Length: 148
Image (tube, rainbow, N blue to C red; front, side):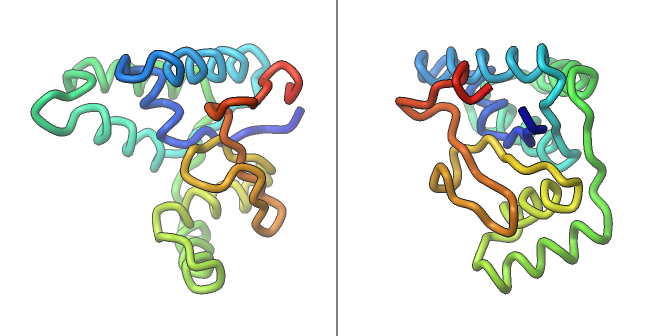
C-alpha cells in the first residue's frame, strides 16, 4: 500500500456527528492510516481543518479543541510543508487542469512529494491527474480492507 494524502473533508467528518455513516467511515480511514503509517497531511490541510471545524454560529469544535486535535493529527501523521514549488505547481494545476487553487495546492503537494493517492470527497473517485489518484473512502462501496 502506498502513502495517502488525507484531505480536509476526511478530518472534518471524523470530528463531526452530523452524518453518522460518514463519521464512522472517516474514523476507520484515519485509524487504518495511523496503524499502517501511510497517512500524510499538509500544513494547508491542518489549517483548513481548524477553519472548517471552528466557523459559523454552531462550530463542530471550540478553537481550543480544534487546536488540540490538529496537534494530535500533526503527531500522528507526517506533515508536508508548503513550499514555493508547491505554490507554482498548484498554479500550473489551475491553468492546465482547471482546478480551484486550493484543490490544486493539495494535488501539487501530493505530486511533488510522490504521494500517489489523495483520500478526498471533493473529486470524482478514481480520477487521476499526472500520477495522482483521487479516491473517496467515504462513498458507499469503498472497501477500505480491500484497498489496504
